[in-house]
Length: 329
Ligand code: NAD
Ligand code: LMR
Image 1 (cartoon, protein in one colour):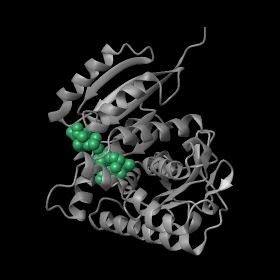
Image 2 (cartoon, protein in one colour):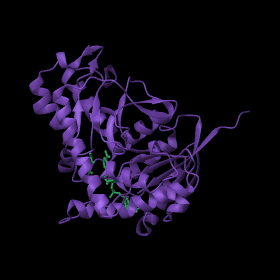
Image 3 (tube, protein in one colour):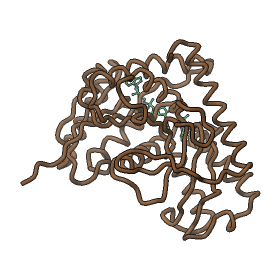
Image 4 (cartoon, helix red, strand yellow):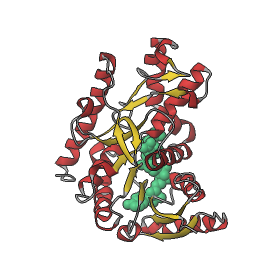
């Protein structure tokens, strides 16, 4: 009998809301498929280790056949030891009166050391998905502290924005989300992001010919870009189950490939589409042999260009801020 495949998956912020929605699905096989056994490593701050241990008890009680082991720790070097996949969810939320620079500094002190621990202890082919906000710049900081890990192994989550876009389009067109292809989220996981339907189709038909441009500009783009705020206002807390589901989707497709022509992910720019090299920006991407490839050669009309540039400008400003703070070189 052949040995089943095993994967070590590290989740930071495991006792948080997203962690609680994420762990059970990973342990059930939703992320890495039905033939890969999973060793979970949960990283938390000391004050939340006990709560994460409580979640571990519940994971035990699910009797998931694919779940090999669960370790809970507050030590990054232990949590990332031999990690094949790392989901960096734990982050410092913005507190009242906190400026953006304060938030970037607070998160820099989390993602810098975690990047270093990944560099020193994780598997050589680690895949890192940063969920904690500001996700793109946190991924940039982590990658900067992991010089021995290829930069393309660090990604930021914009799959939630992509899924939100699919859901809005399917509702508008009265079709299934699986019938929609060719949607792209460009730029930052923030209100400046650009959800782009230029190349999107529904059942093979160009969506631009099925919806009014006014709806795209006045409703679709702002609705998707501000959905995070809409959820916070409605729930009184930031999205958790949908964020966890998107994280599962993003890692699943990265490792195992996806069904659509392409999806969206925050990846390190190679200079494609005028996005400065090294920025972690959302692009149209497809998973090829276990790596993300930025879809090349798409036509970018002026309407899109200005919106992509605006979001990329924000990413450049965030990079400048963390540089000024000494968080990256
Ligand atoms: P939460 O506050 O419920 O949980 C965060 C957890 O992280 C807490 O348990 C906390 O103890 C832990 N934590 C803090 N610092 C840590 C550290 N240094 N190491 C390990 N753990 C640490 O928050 P949540 O709802 O789970 O959201 C987590 C993050 O995800 C937030 O930054 C949120 O804004 C972000 N988010 C991103 C997206 C996206 O699409 N990229 C979507 C939703 C939420
Ligand atoms: C989301 O898009 O739901 C979150 O990133 C919002 C937030 O600020 O946590």
